[in-house]
Image 1 (tube, rainbow, N blue to C red):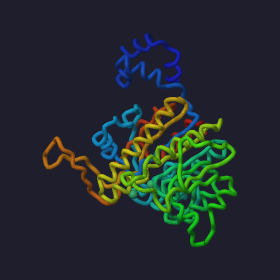
Image 2: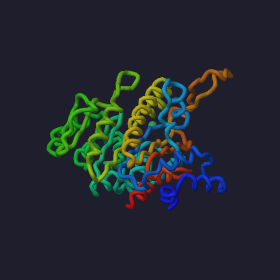
Image 3: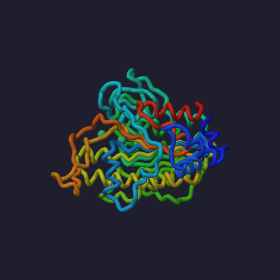
Image 4: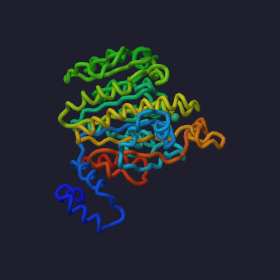
Length: 374
Ligand code: MG
Ligand code: ZN
């Protein structure tokens, strides 16, 4: 209701209201104008969920210190924090973390789209697909890795990547891009899932992806561009993440019902596990570039909700001063695993104001459903 009154009241009246009212409202004229322009409608048509695996505040801050460009994270106004513990552990893994986003439940570490009793639970991607949305998943890991898998697969344990590949082949996903070709064509059961994908309506490419390629709307698209994970950003992955994201948006946005896509910066987490700051920062800057493309799309279309978050922080990463030299940053790790620190959530577009505050990771799913009146 508050939002509706924003749209119909003049700036002068707003200025008066702000001049004499509450402390939790923006206090400058500039903020008021920005805010009134910023809220085109409250129900988004499209949802873009970006997961920067293993990204805490220090990883995000590295996009400020290690790039000449401004960070795309600075384009957000609505920011919150999530508590990331899983049902089994204080510190989550990526499977339980992604399942909480995808299905709104807390489960055990290692679980892909199943409850603590290993019962399959519907995912937001499946639910939206059922009511006509076009759907996609993009990752720089294998496309069968824990994070993307949690949106379309239901298995007891994350390492079951051959089973996960079967789930993807038979899923309602319309567009996917990532690594993991081996789980489709070098399988222990000798099934050729590339053939099965094409009989299920997929055009599969194992060589390249071009953001401007011609799209046939009667087809689904799958890109499997590496035998296992994609190469590291600092070792020549190129613009894969941006290109796959842009092509995915081009294709999925042709669906008049709206779309849902999950885009993962998978290897930020791997740089953290390796305690390799160069690897981590390279992945972070790559993710930030893809984020820029997503925000450009959302600014243009005005009906797209963008949510950026992480499943957990990895590495206990900090941007320390170098032995007391406050003019020099020394990236420092405190663990080879994950940490239990809260992680930020950034939201842009219709409904983005609902993502401020501190809440459980499972609330991301419930907030999306609420905004879509589901
Ligand atoms: Mg991941
Ligand atoms: Zn990890």
